[in-house]
Structures are given as C-alpha cells and as structure tokens.
Amino acid sequence: MLFEPRASDLDLDEVEAALLRAAVGDYAAEAAVLLLSVHGHWVPQLRAAGLVDLTVYEADPGQGEQVFAAVDWSRVDPALAAGHVAGDSGQRRVLRAAESLAEGRPVDLADLTGGLDRGDLSLLLAAVAHAGGSHGSSAPLVPWPPRG
Image (cartoon, rainbow, N blue to C red; front, top):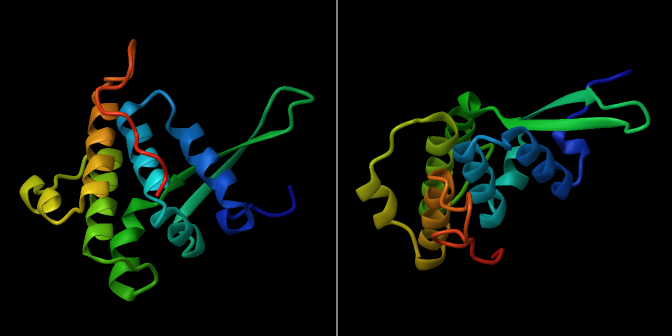
C-alpha cells in the first residue's frame, strides 16, 4: 500500500460500514455507531475533521481488503472546543451519549435526556436498548427510528 487511507477519502456509507464492521460483537460499540449513523449529524463532521481512524486488513485471497474504522474519542472534545466540529445542544448530547456507549465515559442522564427533542430521545432509547442486548433473540425492545 502506497499510502494510508483516510476516512475523508471514503464515501459516507463506506465510513459508516467500516465503523459498524469494527464494532460488531460489542453491543455498546454497535449502539454508539448506530446512534451516530442514524442521527446523521456527526459522522460526516467527524470524518471531515480527521477524527475517524481507519485500519485496512487483507481479506482472504480474492476478497480484497476490509476497512475497519473507529472514532478517535480522545480528540473529539478538543475538536469541539476548537470549532473543528460543531453542533447545537441536542446534537452535542447525542455525541456525548455515543461517546459514553463507546468508551464507558459517564454522563449525567438527567442533563442528557432533558435537552433532547423527541426524535433524538427515541434514538437514545434505541441505542440503550441495543447496548443492553434487547435485539439478541427477538425484536428490539425499542426499534431504531428511520434515519432523520
């Protein structure tokens, strides 16, 4: 490989697929990725700001390469403070919820939920249900709403 690929080189769908590919099997990580993807605001910004790291693995012969991605959560708060990524208060709450799911970072649920509109609250409920494994052997306790 002549150069390391960057998330900004990939289509948004490819970035989301790579994020989910890396999270599969860890329900909390899956929930974080799905929360960001279905919400729609953050993945394009994180990708454009260089906050999504890629890892490329050679697949089986004839299968090509597989790309895995992860948000570099250690750089998200500094990027927010510097204005490299931005969102309104509700969008920031969604980002904090995703970070909590992905990294185990504590959040104040009263503050988090109190500032979400109905659509974002539905997304958060679906993410928490997913992280808890409610989708494992039956229909999810709280289904994911359609992309907004």
